[in-house]
Image (cartoon, rainbow, N blue to C red; front, side):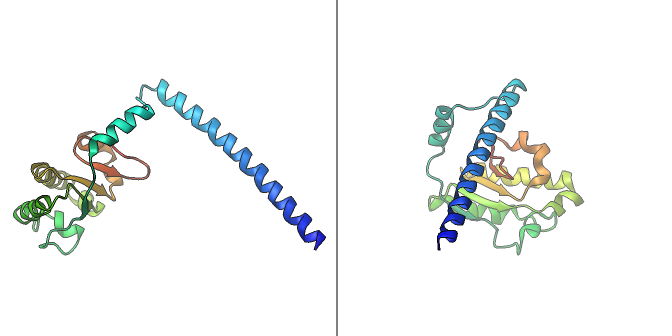
Length: 166
């Protein structure tokens, strides 16, 4: 029993030491990244600026969105089945009941096959969401990293740690 207690104490001490060393290293990495980012010209928000931005967003109320005429995310944005009338009608219903955001899943196959057409349809969709004062959350969009400057003011973007200001 004494051996067990000694072993557990040693393991605990090792984990504590490792955890403290890891935290110190992470803090050092954060400081380096912050100074590198600041020197690269990227604006970093203060805590107050981030809180002010968040306060302007209001209470987010929404759901996953897929129009009733589409069976999946591919069909929603395909040229042959992109149904703006249904999207407009159903987003209007959502706005009427107080929703102000919708998560929309996007698929990279559409972008690979017809990037210009897909971006045009996505832009049309964003025009409809703006009409109803609904801010979409675009999910699954690693291929849109080059387009984020265009989308930044219109959507919340969720992608591997990236959240655009909107």
